[in-house]
Structure formats: C-alpha cells, structure tokens
Length: 243
Image 1 (cartoon, rainbow, N blue to C red):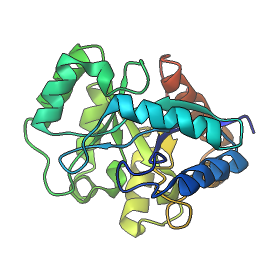
Image 2: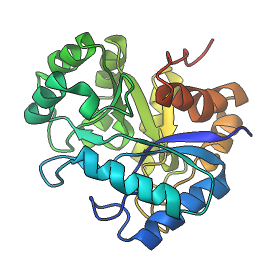
Image 3: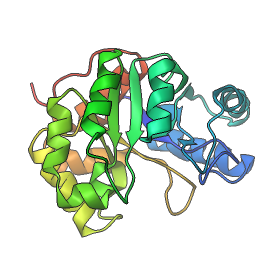
Image 4: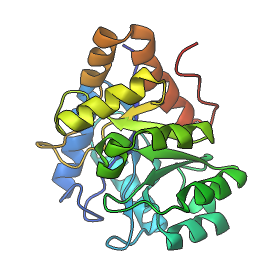
C-alpha cells in the first residue's frame, strides 16, 4: 500500500510519558517505517503535567531524524489538552500548537470532565481558522457514555481521530464499540497510532488499515489511514469520509 502518515505519536524522548530514551525513540521510528509509515508527527503532551516547549521539541526532532537510520518524514505538533489556559494560549498563537504550520490542531479532552463551555471554546478556535482534531474520543469514558456529543462536535466543523489499536480491542470492548459506532456514522476522519513505546503501545497503522478493509471497505481504509492524514500534514482539505 502507499506510505501511511501517523499524525499522533509520542516519539520524542524525555518530554512526556512516551519514549524513555533515544534508543526507544529510534526503534519506534524503525517499527513505524517497517509497518509502512512514511511520515510521523511528533506530538508531545501539552498539559499541566508536561510543559510544551515547541522550540526544544523541534531540536529533538531534528536529532531523531538524523539518528533513526531510516527514511522518514517528520512534523511537529502536540497532544493539546483542552484546558482554559491552553485554549487562551492557542487563540493568541495557534501555530505554536498546531501540526507543523498547518491549520490543524490535535485536541485531547480530560477523562474526568468535559466543560459545558467546550463547544463554545471549540467554535472560538474554529473562527481563528484552526480545525480541531478530537483525539481518541472512543477511549474517553465520558464520550463513551454520550458518543452523540462527538457528532455535535463534527457538525460544528471538528474532525475525529481514532486510535489504531482501539479497532483491535486493545483498549477494551467499550472503546472498540464506540469506535465502530462513530465509524458507522461517518464521524471518524483519521486513524493514528498514539504510540508511546515499542512494546505495549508501539507505532503502526497497517493493522487498522487491514481491519477497516475487512469490516468496511478498502476505500475507507485508505481514506482514514493514508489520504486524510496526508492532507493534514500538507494543510489540505480533508476529504469526506465517504464520497
């Protein structure tokens, strides 16, 4: 299959709960490359626990590109925790957090509560010309109970990214069922690995591609694993999930 693009990965060492060393970071890239990924977006957490220093992250990414030993394209982004402080910072300087210099921003919600003002805050970001990509809603306990909330976000202009191994059941039956519920309603736009290591949460999208091809269609598998993620890193319009 054509090379895939992974828009969500924690491959930079020492910045968060992802890669623990340069050796692990390089091995993660090699695993992704062997699996068919041609472009990885490094997305360290940006939250209260992990400070996001984009300049330093870019320095690490340049070193990783030189040291990984395989041909891989890279972009920088972040796993943007949807807090009041982060939203205000993004409204002032959206491309400090976005994927590369694109108009796409990964957005992660808390597992413990989603503010009633979330929809308004998302609309404020959208009016700045930035498209939020909601990350792994199928794994969020609150959205698992009310997945129709995700449909409201999509209607307002947001996109949705599901984790590749949610489709295999790695995150449990509820996450898998929620992912399928969203897929059935054309509310998934991108598949990404959200890789954190080489063993338990390694990179790789080919398994999800095969699953989507078997249970839905080749066209949908290619749209979610190849075409749409590539459009994100190239700052192009995302294609409709189904033509």
